[in-house]
Image (cartoon, rainbow, N blue to C red; front, top):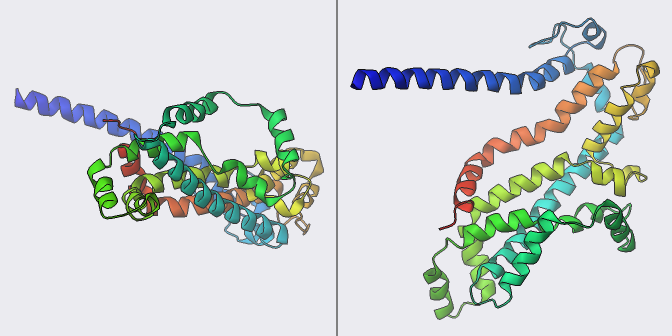
Length: 299
């Protein structure tokens, strides 16, 4: 019986492992191929056949990408936007979650309903655009920050986590004369590091990958263009094969003979845009797993 169990367990684990490996390869290959293309000579890439490794290694594609100030400016805007989004969203959302998780707050149910309903019902694009316009946020850097200060989904995750903190800890601080500010900054925030790191990752990935708000609210101001918007802009322009090298000009890149092509520049910009998140994620992965486990279970 034991041998049969071990045999069935071995077959089960082998099949599952094989499926997961194949799935991982399918997910990883497109990005790996993009990296290979970005390091391959542009003219040679046109021939095709680039799979896992560059056939003729070169850094010319990246030199062209970073030869213009537009990419550096877009990169800086994306970094500044991501950092501010993380700081403001985590701070204000966690503060609201703390208040609405306290049983002695009389309007907590009403405010919670308002926040949850906003996840499913929103005003729509046009009313939101006019709201942003009337607030004077069009073509302003703050259009990236103010509308994202609070997230209903992140609120639910943090509130669920905070409900798991023993009430005795909070009461002991109150007995010692601690105010709500003392409890929040010295007790709640340190204990909530795992779930806050998880929320920070959610916000960072969303802010870094966002380009639609740039298109709607800040497309007419080049200095506010984000890296993802520049990538989207070039991806669209490079689809017109008849433009040839002129597509590169849409990104503000200088045209230098046939040393680069839209395909090679597109691959290089894609790698540059994805690299920061790939680098940062391993350092907060443990908090991500812990935070999701603790913030998603209601006792």
